[in-house]
Structures are given as structure tokens and as C-alpha cells.
Length: 65
Image (cartoon, rainbow, N blue to C red; front, side, top):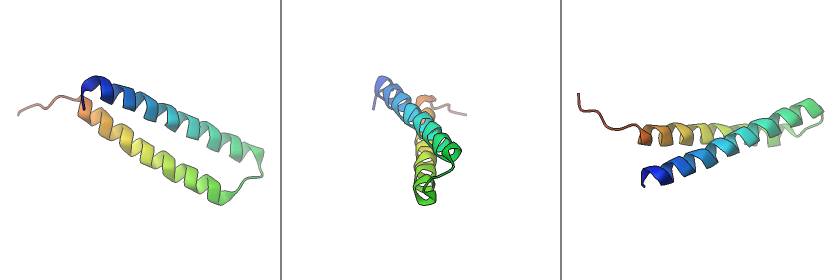
């Protein structure tokens, strides 16, 4: 995967992470929400966070010590 593709994927994953965060916040503020649904959304958000970290690591050049 080249750097442009990584940056594009990173941008998409970060946007999905933000959208999930907003959706979770909106559901919790509404007061009436399905706890299982929120749990699944939070789990998905954590998976996205891991993907973000992986993609960011791929953008850092290898440094030979």
C-alpha cells in the first residue's frame, strides 16, 4: 500500500470514528437507548482506533538504530 492510499484510508477511518463518537453521544443524551447497541458501537469504535494506530505507524518511516 502506498502512502497516498494509507492517508486516504486513515482519513476515512478517522471520520468513521468521529461519526460513531457523535452517534454514541447523541444516543446517550436521548436517555432512551439500547445498551447492547451502544456497546456494539463502542466496540466498533475501539477497533477503528486500533486501525488508526496501525495506519499511523505505517506512515512513520523505519529508522535504523
